[in-house]
Length: 381
Image (cartoon, rainbow, N blue to C red; front, side, top):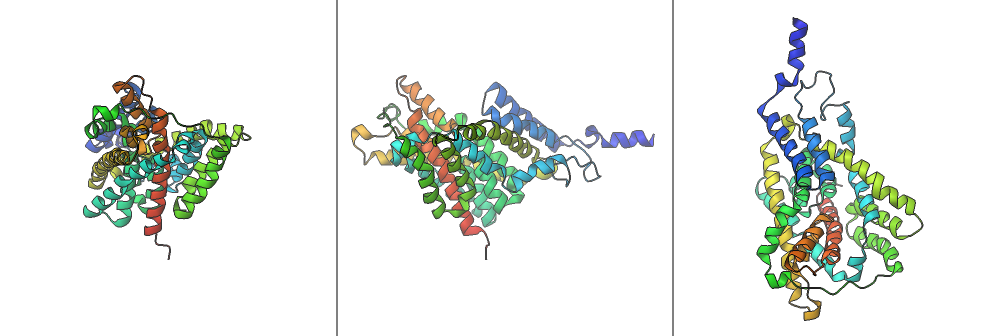
């Protein structure tokens, strides 16, 4: 009977709490959105299943070594890549290897839209400070506004590791919900006439420009923001592998198998980090609210800045202000949302390539912003 009683005490049924039920439901919702609605399934399926794994109830700290937060557990070892900021640069390597920067090179002024969208980061930083978070925690929370999950993980692992799980889940959740969050904001801030603006086709970009960009981009960004070197160095390295024309095998490996493997490990462990006993706190809820505000501000900032730029552009050169919303770093989802909204207004208005320019510059901008925040806040001396 003693053995039977011990077996019962160790079952998930005996250790189930309302917090576990809440988190298990959230995990199921993530999986539903990924499969039924196809909201970023490559992210939400691993994260959703990770939430389920992380919230199977068990007796903690008795030598089972099951939970992500228990030293020696398998999940704990896999989570090492998140805690030490190893996975985000590998993700950036894959992004660089699969990204064509031609749209940005053909119209460099669109880079300003990617910069304008980062306003959400700094306004949320100040809001988090006002709510009582420390300076380091506020900086890590603010970066959610860039809609860049790897950058959010990288920065929070350096400045606020205690909030890493909540920040990572918030960042990836809002990346996945781009098709839900952005369209109402874009429509609210633009008129029908503005949404129907057709832009000039991008000019052809030479091979030399494409090969020079990752090297020039590396120097320009990392000399300004050395803290972003692990992210941007890998981004531009991946892009050079793609554009050089002589390292196709390496580029294909980075853009396909490598990024897929890292995405699986990152998503699963980030999801498992939501263990109810560690995750469900007042701070986590506040982070989710601030993250949503940050993302909405970033979207609005990009759209409004595009409208501001139109005040100084000739009629034939005017921008469709919707592409400003793609200044957030959710590549390529925010660009795809803008493209679909353009087609809804005019079936002959193709905005995808135009929107990709601020979209990829948003990736660079959020990484630069993270590096700047690290330069201000890390206690080096």
